[in-house]
Length: 176
Image 1: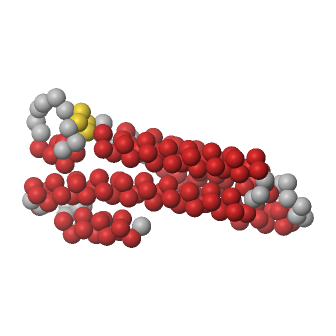
Image 2 (image 1 turned 90 degrees about the vertical axis):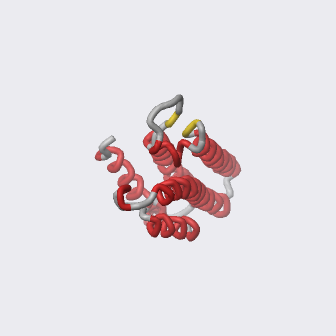
């Protein structure tokens, strides 16, 4: 996340958040170019956090079938990264349209739009988050712990439910 923060600070210094009439054309173009970097860094951080959690599951749960499911989830997580990484670089045709498109008035150009990137990514991540909340619960019920300890461990793993609820509410109240 440190590179993400650094790039974001550079974008803010260039004028991100200001009215485009107050910054130069070169600043606008550079902000759009850095926005591509931000997209890739965000997506990479998101996938790596999920991969770390899945590796943690592999470390603490020894069940063979569960480990296969977790490894399949890791592959799916990696495929999400590959798919959206490719999408970042093909969301505009030609690619330079991403940073020059605001200057174009006509032509045969393809621009998929930012919403076409963010909504599918958010939806897939919501489903994957729910799946990753369910995964450890299946193992915890089978452990030889007393009910009180099981509920304590499950409540610890369930903190992520608040994040899932927050993301769901963002979908509900988004003005798209």
